[in-house]
Amino acid sequence: QVQLVESGGGLVQAGGSLRLSCAASGSTSSINAMEWHRQAPGKQREPVASISSSGRTNYVDSVKGRFTISRDNAKNTMYLQMNSLKPEDTAVYYCYVNTRPWDNGYWGQGTQVTVSS
Image 1 (cartoon, rainbow, N blue to C red):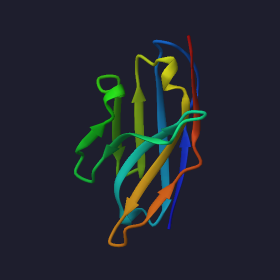
Image 2: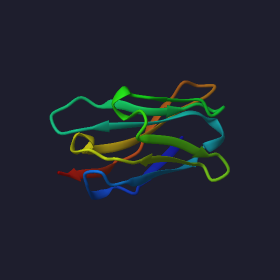
Image 3: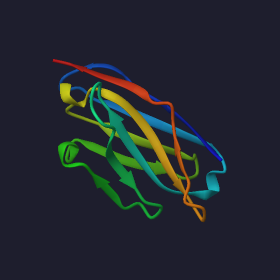
């Protein structure tokens, strides 16, 4: 099993920046892909960014050019650098990891990001 703890959320004005962290523990050697998802009030949870074990990244169109996902495997930590934040980025951001060889998924508890206009 893998345990995930997010941190770094908070309140920021539009145009500001935040860096989220996701620290993994437990069976970290089984982690394959790592992802960030977010859920705004009244909306469905959506994937924001992902990074493969080889470092390949993908982003939802709405954050391309503003967000950067990265991972430090030695520290078992994933990051999401968020720049030029907009009010529509306001959501709870969740860390998610996929494991191998068993295709299991694990979620963190989430961290709140609030962007004021």
